[in-house]
Image (cartoon, rainbow, N blue to C red; front, side, top):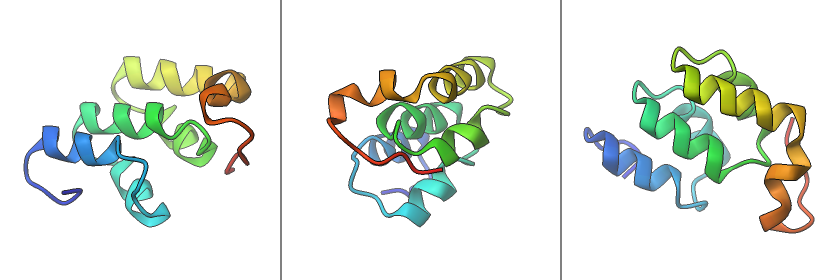
Amino acid sequence: MSGDSTASVRAAAAASRRLTFDTLTRLAQDRSAQVRWHVLTMNPERLDLAATIARDSDETNAHQARRQLADPRHFTEFLGDVDLVH
Protein backbone atom coordinates (compact mmCIF):
# COMPACT_ATOMS: atom_id res chain seq x y z
CA MET A 1 0.00 0.00 0.00
CA SER A 2 2.76 2.48 0.85
CA GLY A 3 4.17 2.09 -2.67
CA ASP A 4 0.83 2.40 -4.47
CA SER A 5 0.60 4.87 -7.35
CA THR A 6 -2.53 6.47 -5.85
CA ALA A 7 -1.88 9.17 -3.25
CA SER A 8 -5.01 8.41 -1.24
CA VAL A 9 -3.90 4.79 -0.84
CA ARG A 10 -0.43 5.88 0.30
CA ALA A 11 -2.06 8.36 2.70
CA ALA A 12 -4.22 5.59 4.18
CA ALA A 13 -1.10 3.48 4.64
CA ALA A 14 0.70 6.38 6.33
CA ALA A 15 -2.17 6.69 8.81
CA SER A 16 -2.04 3.04 9.85
CA ARG A 17 0.70 3.27 12.55
CA ARG A 18 1.91 -0.18 11.46
CA LEU A 19 4.56 0.92 9.01
CA THR A 20 8.24 0.43 9.60
CA PHE A 21 10.56 3.24 10.61
CA ASP A 22 12.13 3.26 7.14
CA THR A 23 8.81 3.27 5.28
CA LEU A 24 7.54 6.25 7.28
CA THR A 25 10.81 8.05 6.68
CA ARG A 26 10.35 7.53 2.93
CA LEU A 27 6.69 8.60 3.02
CA ALA A 28 7.66 11.83 4.83
CA GLN A 29 9.21 12.84 1.50
CA ASP A 30 6.32 11.62 -0.67
CA ARG A 31 5.31 13.83 -3.60
CA SER A 32 1.76 14.14 -2.18
CA ALA A 33 1.08 16.75 0.52
CA GLN A 34 -1.80 14.56 1.69
CA VAL A 35 0.55 11.64 2.34
CA ARG A 36 3.04 13.85 4.18
CA TRP A 37 0.17 15.25 6.31
CA HIS A 38 -0.88 11.76 7.41
CA VAL A 39 2.71 10.80 8.19
CA LEU A 40 3.04 13.91 10.34
CA THR A 41 -0.25 13.82 12.21
CA MET A 42 -0.44 10.07 12.80
CA ASN A 43 3.16 9.77 14.01
CA PRO A 44 3.64 12.79 16.28
CA GLU A 45 6.32 11.02 18.31
CA ARG A 46 8.57 11.03 15.23
CA LEU A 47 10.15 14.44 15.64
CA ASP A 48 12.65 13.49 12.94
CA LEU A 49 9.75 13.36 10.47
CA ALA A 50 8.35 16.64 11.76
CA ALA A 51 11.76 18.26 11.23
CA THR A 52 11.75 17.08 7.62
CA ILE A 53 8.19 18.23 7.00
CA ALA A 54 8.82 21.59 8.74
CA ARG A 55 10.64 22.56 5.51
CA ASP A 56 7.73 21.32 3.37
CA SER A 57 6.64 23.19 0.26
CA ASP A 58 3.04 22.86 1.48
CA GLU A 59 2.62 25.63 4.05
CA THR A 60 -0.11 23.77 5.97
CA ASN A 61 2.18 20.79 6.49
CA ALA A 62 5.16 22.97 7.35
CA HIS A 63 3.15 25.01 9.86
CA GLN A 64 1.78 21.90 11.57
CA ALA A 65 5.24 20.35 11.75
CA ARG A 66 6.68 23.47 13.35
CA ARG A 67 3.86 23.43 15.93
CA GLN A 68 4.59 19.78 16.73
CA LEU A 69 8.29 20.51 17.13
CA ALA A 70 7.59 23.45 19.43
CA ASP A 71 5.36 21.45 21.80
CA PRO A 72 5.68 17.73 21.04
CA ARG A 73 4.00 16.41 24.21
CA HIS A 74 0.82 18.30 23.34
CA PHE A 75 0.54 16.21 20.17
CA THR A 76 1.44 12.84 21.73
CA GLU A 77 -1.05 12.87 24.62
CA PHE A 78 -3.35 10.42 22.84
CA LEU A 79 -0.49 7.90 22.65
CA GLY A 80 0.19 7.88 26.37
CA ASP A 81 3.78 7.79 27.59
CA VAL A 82 5.83 7.37 24.40
CA ASP A 83 9.45 8.05 23.57
CA LEU A 84 10.01 10.92 21.18
CA VAL A 85 12.17 10.01 18.20
CA HIS A 86 14.64 12.71 17.28
